[in-house]
Image (tube, rainbow, N blue to C red; front, side, top):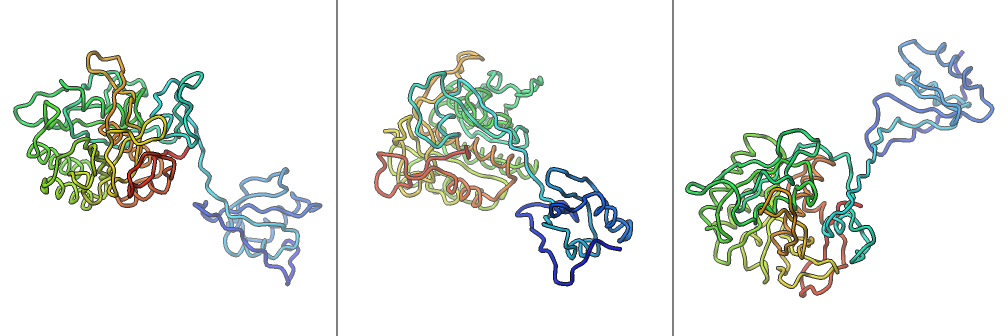
Length: 388
């Protein structure tokens, strides 16, 4: 005989809001009902393949298992039942805290305004579920000093995460000015980086602080081909700019961001209206302005309506190319952009791949709004945040 049916009862099934285990349900019984007896009766009343018991619980006075529609219908009609839920898939939250981090990492991982000189130093908080190396960040810049220990493997393996991907003909690999190394360090350095598990790929387009557009275009072409060949989620950081009328650079960046669904492009501007510069004004790119520790626009940061959001950029911690161990502090919108590049790579690893447009919108939705000061009229007031 099945559990006591009632013609007037058909219990609702409380649906999971996210992913659920297929055909698996949790059943809670009314107080006073004999749990073991109910389970035995249910097992006898349905086909053996229709219900398979997983667990019984004394705390919630219920049980879980897999049910066919026929077995589930028996339970839904039983007056002994108090509640039926789909078996929801839960995610573990693993909060990681990095002590003695730079202020920039601290700022993108908390909502309240920073204490300028906190006791114990600054702290960076991120989700440990993103501690894998599934995303590439291409650094189109002056090269990377790949032997710096900021680019060691966080798991302690011998391999380095930074590699020489492309070197413009006539140039040597490495970084003699330090700009690309600093950018790579902010995006993915062990101590000063946002996403410490990224593969950092150097795309060297110059040996000075002023690479020419033709070199940059060639570097972007290399990135497009590499991403297509690898099939890996990728982020492109371009901490550089050219004044109008550099339409070739603007057009190529726009085309890349629209065409390549696995590529997100982060760029900087300069001290003026970013709409006057390429690739900052390029559609579909993430144009980043620089903020300081007091949540004000850095005095030399770009501004204007084409700025997507702001990130730390004044006196932030970066690798020093004079040796393979030291860090230093530098300022620039060049350093604000890789905070966003690293954050995008982190979010891809945490939440899965998104199109560039979807990722930009996600960053806007999760940014801290209305906190920044000293913004010219029409400049979006968004400070990026990693969700903590």
